[in-house]
Picture 1 (cartoon, rainbow, N blue to C red):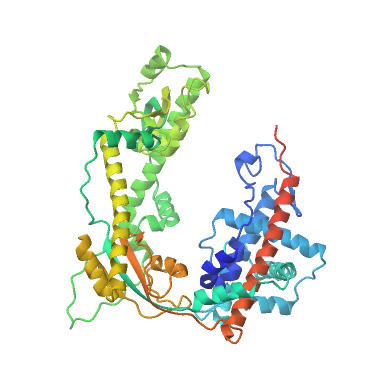
Picture 2 (picture 1 turned 135 degrees about the horizontal axis):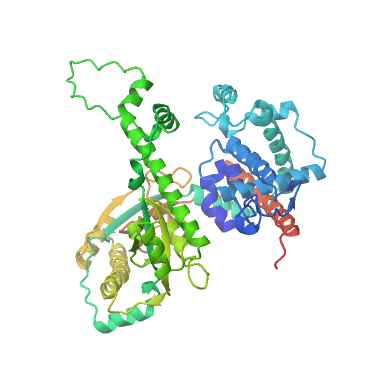
Length: 567
């Protein structure tokens, strides 16, 4: 854990509380999916799952639990970017568990003064300087009056009040926090050591060793990597097509419907950009035209009408396919003469599809992953040879299964070209690594002989027959590193001493050598003001980790109590 702190703590301390929302010590169970029997279709039997005052089997409780967590996170982080649904759910679980502890420990409700103080710490209301911005808060309150989510100031106050109680519990769980002096010194050394680095870079893309693999080498490589050339399972099927263009002419739309479709999707129909001649320096710029919604709509009316008619033609095509699929099911029509007669009577045609995989659907139907997924549900073992109606880019379709070809290993003759390419690339990478070792040895030898880094790399490049571009970076610390620094060169610093050359780093099609021209370690005694602040930061962080681990375990135990029993 200390190693992790040493590596990342310095970069993320200012976002420590936000980071706490993302730390998951133990993977939690996703209970809101269809396979769990919770949160699925209303037609399914609901399974009661008690969780700290919520019933995870009820959709309303699910939405209340996650909705409160989403709003809490948004207020604290200022935005929802970077928080996916799984992380929000984990935070919702931990927040509910922490509030349960607050009830058990009789933590009182937040006072108006505490809520006011908490508001001033929320990132949602922070300005560019990170401090509370009264104008941002006032704008937020004004927006509440017109928002469509049903939020109001009382709801926001309820969330903030609960978060105040959560923070009180977190402080009790965290305790004082403990950290060893050696850990503080290690972190301080890493953050405030002054580095003057020199780098030398060679290009991987232009590196072109002559590689001519023999038949035996290719065969050996293929045998060792045969899993890379496995042919996945494929479905062989045909389809009955219901093209949407067959229904387009029969679709009628009114002017009101076209306008309503535009109003609901204005971003889909941007007004064509008018290309104007360039102005010379003496010609004043034209005035910005006033917004004219009527003119904007008129400019794209034909496009909107066409799109609406296509959507409705698509629905008609899928509905017709659905009616046909129902007739096939009710008539118990099977592939063969009976299906041929059914299609002939309705003037429909069965069209072949090229074999396709689960990952790449039939190219004739737009490589649709949804259609591929449905195709793999067909087969004799599944008791279904004909699919339901499916939506395709061209309209509606019904799949007719023929066979499912199992996955198999390719023959070398089938994939010889790809094997040769992969072998050549792998061999090139190996030789590039060896080249790096050679260059490093050459540079180190020249450095020992008294050359500076630039001369040493120039001599090594000539000997190795490659091009090396060298440069020296101004002195910096990790606490105040340049914004444009290549992060790949920072990796070796923990193992690098003054005058040492790191192994070649391969990243972004480049091979880079890092040389520590200067290394100045800071004062590591308690006389250094940074020592005290770093110790406090590390102690706070480790304390919060302990508290988070406790709540995570509490969540896992509560979920396990109502876990559905295995049949």
